[in-house]
Length: 73
Image (cartoon, rainbow, N blue to C red; front, top):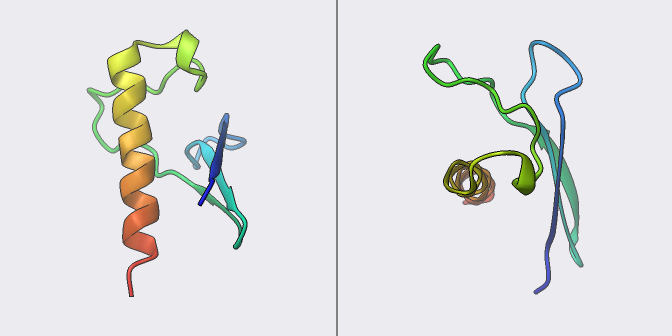
């Protein structure tokens, strides 16, 4: 199954990045939670070329984990 994941900048101070996951079954859009820890600064941009590659990989892992836990029965 082929999936497409799109991530967009937050549109509000209270919401995190907007994530859209699309497959042949449908499309789901949700917002990531803002980090609670003051130690973690929000990225200046979500694009992979704009931030540290390891941090970007961590963010993508969070998205996958969130998506997987929301779809469990």
